[in-house]
Amino acid sequence: MVEELPQAEDAIAACADTAIWALSEGELIAALDTVHRIEQRLASVKLAVIRELDGRGTATTHGASSTAVWLRERLRLTIPAARRLVDLAAVLDTGSPGVRHALAGGHITMEQARVIADTVDTVRTAAGPEAADKSLGVLVEWAGHFDPTLLRKLSTRILDHVAPDIADAAAEAALDAEARRATRDRHLTVSTLADGRLRLTGILDSETAGLLRAAIDPISAPSGPDDQRTPGQRRHDALSDVCRLALRTGELPEHGGDPAQVVVTTSYDGLIRQLGSGALDTGLHLTPEAVRRLACDAAILPAVLSGAGQPLDLGRQRRLISGPLRRALVLRDRGCAFPGCDRPPRWCDAHHIEHWADGGDTSLTNAVLLCGHHHRHLHHSDWTVRLTGDGHPEFVPPAWLDPKQLPRRNHYHRRT
Image 1 (cartoon, rainbow, N blue to C red):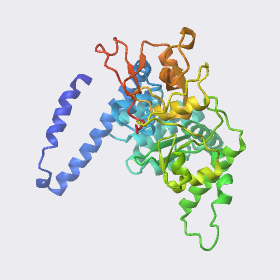
Image 2: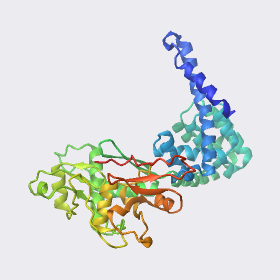
Image 3: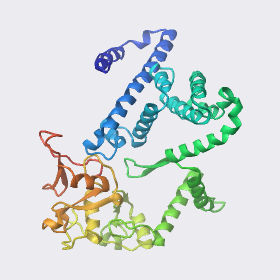
């Protein structure tokens, strides 16, 4: 029963105080096996809870754009980890109950459960429910011996074991299913590190992988015998060159009414004297050398700051927030200002705090940067937004969500 989870938590907490050093090697191994089995059983409960919350739309109720984003904020997970939980919860809910029972029994891990669920679904489509039930038993047995990666490889020939008469014909169907999984699993995650650099992770489908290879392979080879860059550094620089080329074409979609561009903030005197550092609109600080290099390669887009480092109000009396006014807004908000959102500026719209139709002017003091989801959410919910004395936006939740209606701020974007 879910109601008994607090007691289970207390029991596990008590185990943490055990004198592990006093246990024999056999006892330690037995303890490891038991802890691992409990982890998988708890995982099955966790996935069931996540599936129910997802079905109820809890994330939307709390102002998040998806259950994965809500889990990131609630459980302090990365977006990829949260998305995997949501996806696996859905797969286990709609797939074979035998996979859920195997996970709940501690016989398989969550990663193995994903492989088995995908394979059983493929077998059911190709050979029917009886063969699917047989494949489940075989795969669970294999899971006791093989890790998820090897289990995935072995599963491609599961029909040889459970339905050999149709194995060859089903191999083509399995390839089609694998292509569908590749389409489902494709993603690219851009994570900001503590120092402002970006970490790229993801999975590309075969077509996109081919496009990437075709784009960067010709320019990621060593430039000569004296090229000391590692292969990874050369691929990094090749990707940078491809991005520069795309920006120069002028054919990328506009963002907030402006062409796609890199905005660097620096002082005019510092630039002239070749001493001033700068900052990108993403918040990453640049060395004077990098500023000068970008200045040679792109038009300078000036941003005038006050003595306290705040962008000056440009006072544009028009309905559309674009051009210099949008750049000032990006410098202030750094991205979607809604609490808990990490969407960057280029994914955001400029929102009038007091609507234009209600007499609100188009100025920095009447604007806030919001991603598309939170822009819509603010227009169709009881949340309100206002600027505080320090010039930054804060959001007041509706009373039904927070009876005290304590103002909230976004802490994902650095304030400098």
